[in-house]
Picture (cartoon, rainbow, N blue to C red):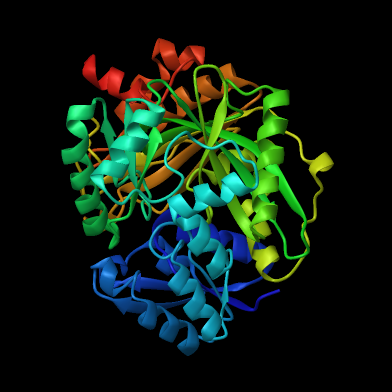
Length: 447
């Protein structure tokens, strides 16, 4: 087992990694920017080191500074969490070159599956059902029009290097295609440094369902059920639940077996997720692979009893998985709400000082957060300040428990998305389980 791990992240995920390391008897090093000196992850790590100013490009994304910090603090491994450098193949490569273990997949895995067009081509080779669309990069307006006519409008243009819901544009009719294609290329270049895009068929009322996998260095791979991530705004997930209301045992096994097959095909090692889009006929298609721990991993932990963070660290140490597929079961139902420092009416950032803070509790309620009374939420980073997770014997109980927990959650001084979550959880569509990725837009349009 590692002696010391440096955490190349901040906030609640850094705190989550610290807790996993403490349970494993591993010392931790927190990196922080000057804006995060008073953060809880800095306080609760065994050691800490500042890596730069508030701007993440000069701190949490500053590879030379982070590697120097690891060397100074004598850390054997680096855990990137999610976001920032978690899916940066160059960073994983730099860790290897410096003799530091990157807790995650190989640089080759990250590069291959991080490029959405290349990932799709690869999945076609292993007979994975993929979204109808281009087989790779679309380089010209003429080629875009040919693909669009083949799959039929509407279509969605996506950045090959995209992520987090950015770099996507929907085209409903032929007359819009050329301008939208050029805008998508420009947006991709500005956001990700590459103007490469690809095209897929756009479904009007889809579900977004992902399968969690764990793969060790001995070739053992398991899936831990699925998560429904369909409650999202502008492709950003807001509420997740497991099991998915639309997935039965047969479909779960099919999706899980395909996810394992895909991971095995690319020689994947570590925690990861295979993401599927599900149409109204419950046909599912590969969208992408996330080569990192996911924000919503806690709900899978709640229904399986498996600590995904600890397993990811053990895998990086070279240990074999301690569970087989037959030993993995799903118990009850779990829901996660991402509590963001945002105005829930406009979804605009709401940084500032938290003047009062009280987290909910009780059986089956979990809060992953680095927030506290007096904490100053900085304006420089992602707006997620907490993840509220509940577990119930069934979906109805989980929804009731989440409503109770949202009512109990006190965060004053800034605006949060708590009122929005209450609205979603009490909507007829969510309560019935018959919702799609359009749910949030419809609720916001029916104020």
